[in-house]
Length: 233
Length: 233
DNA sequence: TGTGACATATAAGTCTGACTTTTTATTCCC
DNA sequence: GGGAATAAAAAGTCAGACTTATATGTCACA
Image 1 (cartoon, protein in one colour):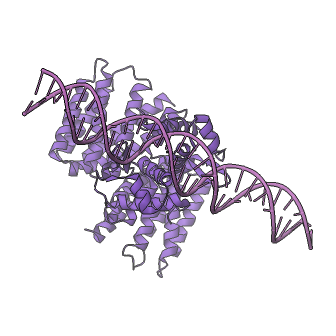
Image 2 (cartoon, helix red, strand yellow; image 1 turned 45 degrees about the vertical axis):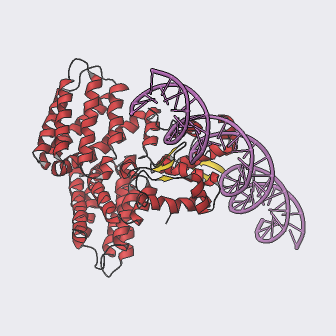
Image 3 (cartoon, each protein chain N blue to C red; image 1 turned 90 degrees about the horizontal axis):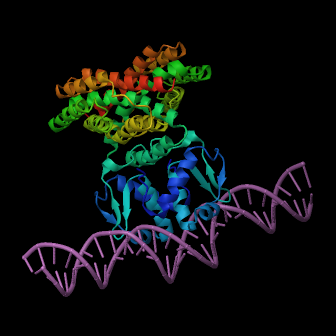
């Protein structure tokens, strides 16, 4: 799942990044490139590349004669998919999940409204296909199949909105949905009401009913928020 | 204005980044580290760091025996403030501005609703102060003063929402608003209706009227969208 | 005692050159 | 013509020397 992967540089990043986003070094902490290079048993060149990437994420700041200082969380590039993944894997996963779900509740209804206007016939077809897939996997503990179609459904909506900023949130939504299925409590089959809403949403988009699409999506994200409230009141 | 600034590495990035986001190298184009190092007259180490940062923004992908290939635009980390700035400075500025304004229209109303619930007394005071500042600078071609308070106003709203994802969009909104004042046509004084809406919004938040705050913000962002339609129909 | 100029130490920044590793492309043999 | 051995190309890695900015401490002078 970790996208960085390749190269010595990536492996160091996959260790150091999560440590920082987990808050193991309080803001203002100073790290030194040489020490880090020793710790990870890599050359300074590799370590410098890692620091540069962390710096571009605004996780740290490198200054001469001082070292690499960890920045406070409110400076971090929290939209960086890498940072999101690191934080979701860490201790403040619940808080992060809530932030992202609230974000979804703002974005997705508007995206659905736009999708109703701009979706191509192919995208409409995909949407109904996904909805049918959700129905088919909505009972009998077929959680993986359900998740697959759910993710695909929301991806199509975001893409069909025609707004690149919305489209880029597909990965985030995928992460949130998959987190709900895998990490959190989800013994039961999915809520039948939610399934119905998705079917109706596919319908609304196909019929170019922007207002209805927006309203239905609002109900879906409301449900997601309430689900969170039940899990972590 | 360019945040990268510091260091030889930053200067190269400030040239190469905009070139890529401007689409000067079509997706799939292959760059070679050595050639780039020659071109910018820097060592390979520096060039490698630049490539690493571009890679973390998903602007390029580096593969052995192949080189540094430019990725298609739909892969880019379009929420990276650096990328946003580069793109706003480039040729597809209008399209980018529209994407961001649509994003605002989705986020800010929800943020305002939350701000009405969670804003501290200090934040409420700041809000009214900003609104007054906008009023004071709304006539007599005091565009800079108006912009300053406008940016501050929206920043407070986003921060007061209590959602870190929303808060982080403060810079984006600042960029959009400042872009409107500086780059685009804005000879006239700001729209009086918009000023009134901001004053009313500060009121609504102070009075904890979430629904009204959300509605007023929707009107503000609607106005911003219509303004764009007039400029680039 | 406070203040400013100066000296010093430190850690990042940069460059160079050699070597390794992976992956693509070519060649050669069957 | 196809598959295995081979060569080449580019990124990846490393080590060491040198440069530069800058925080901090020192000392003289007011």
